Image (tube, rainbow, N blue to C red; front, side, top):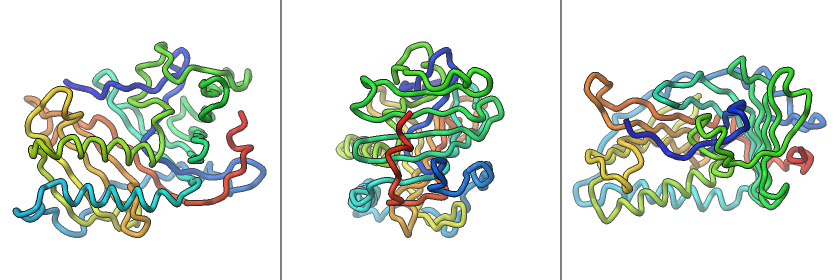
Length: 281
């Protein structure tokens, strides 16, 4: 079974981070309402509002996905910072992790990420923070429970001791990085003209979305990252709020492929004016 190769890192495997886009609640000086209650609410799965359909035969299948990405990048260019609740689940060593519910805060310049865990129970209270150009390129991390009494420690984002804790590095986190990844993938796939696309209207967490599903019938190493990916663009905000990735089907497995990872960004608030103290750890 093929797996995404990039891993998010923490010392001794104590931490598990996600990175593809994100949202949160304020935890500093009452700047936001406390996140602990709202952040534990996990929405249901997206529901179809219209049947997904392939693009017109006269158009390249990836024309509309690339148009949606270009529009999302244009909108996101006006975003200075944002908060959300990140809800993620990943397949690691062949097994799906529990659902992780994380407060997330992101500042785009300099690129800064703060994360605090609310689920699962073993990670409650865990925190991580990264600021580009600060701390010698290290992230600051705090363990859950009694281990957290030592406070924040500096950790290399790519520390090999924790390569099995997540599919992504904290340096890859956020909506901006998510847009770059998918734009790059779709542009690379465009000249091959092997990608199948279905686009429909869905609702997720009471948000109307344009659902873009891309399928790669052929497993071409070094070209296609996964068999199937699904990206949900919030129709009002015009940026992605959920992404799903699936492995190539195998005998005895689901026809759509095993889930590799899913990240959802709920309660998204843009340009909230995050204070610098959020990222001073």
